[in-house]
Length: 224
Image (cartoon, rainbow, N blue to C red):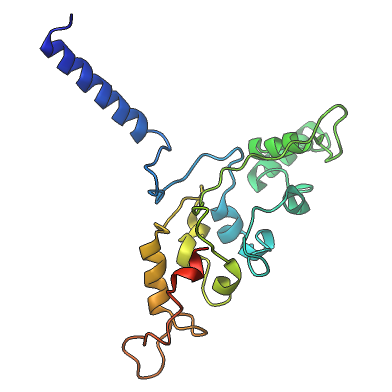
């Protein structure tokens, strides 16, 4: 039978170990997803694509203005660029320099992440179906995941607000994270201060939005 002091030490060890595991993982308490930034199967940089390359959010998330969900783009959207673009400019220049020095034709080089994309799609280095390979869907991990009892429609929101209002500075993120709490209180506060059709700007001479001017805060607007 363990002595009381030993029991205390064992209990403390279990508690500390559990805290370390939770603190170093993507574990979250229910409803507390702010800051959630899971490692994705392919490291997609929004900083590179949205900021450095200047690609509009709607090029990939083309459903944001026309459907309730912005959605994750199909791989066909990725391949509109990555059939040709397979590595960074520095990598391509280095391969050209190597080939020139050797008197050879430059090889088709791939970044590790584009290699993963081709592997999921079952493609060879020429973007042709690889014999015997079976295409697989990319198991992206959803970051912004509202409860089933909440209804959110992108269409009325993107018409009056910037994506960053809810998603934070996505154009600076190497790995997407949930920037805001997306809690009911957070959403309701935004509805209270936003005037329909003005993008949240108060009407002339208005210090505070009137109740009949702000976006509806009726329960049925967001809950079934």
